[in-house]
Image (cartoon, rainbow, N blue to C red; front, side):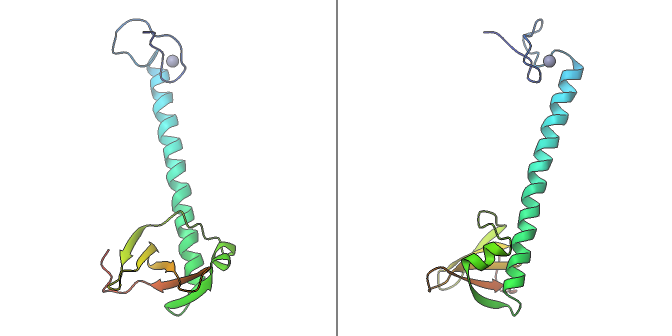
Length: 121
Ligand SMILES: [Zn+2]
């Protein structure tokens, strides 16, 4: 089987366990990988903060029911959350840090709550 450098795709010669042409390709590969991973993590962190900010704006009193579109307008992206919490009543809440939400009984609406001490993560 033809072996190629993980960074530049050139065919590798020499030792069977070689993964890169040389140390330059090796460090370029690792820098590139960690830089794009960091950028990916930063992007998600940014969205999580934006979600928390949207929930906080929509729920200034600790509890609120709002339209889903209103949250989206405020910058909410429902794909990103930090954890979930199930209430005694069995409702599953999705949290972004200290603000959580669940679909409200009224369709198209979201019930937002602020984290309380009794809610164990
Ligand atoms: Zn290479």
